[in-house]
Length: 119
Image (cartoon, rainbow, N blue to C red):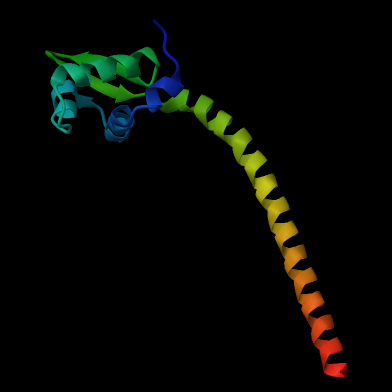
């Protein structure tokens, strides 16, 4: 079964595994030693990461090493970027609106103060 990258990063343990092996490949035992869950649970998480293409298992002698392949995260990055642009535009519009309200309020207060001073 081919899983989707979003499913892989949805779980905090899988995100931690990706972070752990992003800088250097580690064998399965070294990965499992970093977590307080069972080795079969870690194996299941690594299987999902492998099915998503975020991890490749390489055999070196009797050891199996997990290596991160983070190119797949480009899909996530592209998806997030479209929403970042949307929200930046919305926040810019909100900032402009709030500045206008603040300016209008200041102008109103000055006029009110000037009228009160004339009395």
